[in-house]
Length: 296
Image (spheres, rainbow, N blue to C red):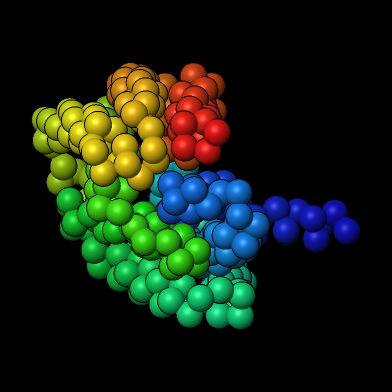
């Protein structure tokens, strides 16, 4: 019994359940379309979330299978289930197959057919990313941003919600910011410890990443304010107070920029959000304030 529980914990580590938090983006289209109180929309968005999470976990399995030799020589990645040997490649391939089949079947039987095509697109793009594109600087980050747009599209298709250009632009900029922030930390690790966190990280420069992060931060703030004061948005939500939510956006960017300059931990967006209480308060404040403005 103990062996089975231990083995299960290794598989849970392999599929990176903590990363499922990224797939909460599928709920954004229905949230901004005032469908959050609709049980049918909640059900469809939940199906999209679970389906996307299984397919994303399949990609993590594939990545660890492909990178196993590199991971074995890495300071921390050597502890991953496949690299450490607690899960064999064969077991990982079975886990990959189960995850992708579950994701596809759930979307096929319980949601709009379009969701399946979004999942297939996400799967193919990320397979190509793992095999080829993650070695090409900047393009690797652009494809990460594309994956977040596909999460939005999955939520929109599942709940029959049209995506506005505003939400797509903001999510792309946010995804780029988070991805470049992660690259910056990986580069710092390489420069200070001579450890390659990823194979292409030595092709980036600190000046380029710092300039890019400052530019993206400024763009996010400017465009979010433009969104907040847009007549189109005021009419959509029947409110002139959307701009109040920009306070949390500015605070969130300042907090995150401060965190990425502190060399105390690996800058992983998921880990930061799950561990940094001030950032959690800021995100919660943004969600609650937006909910009150458009629903109450």
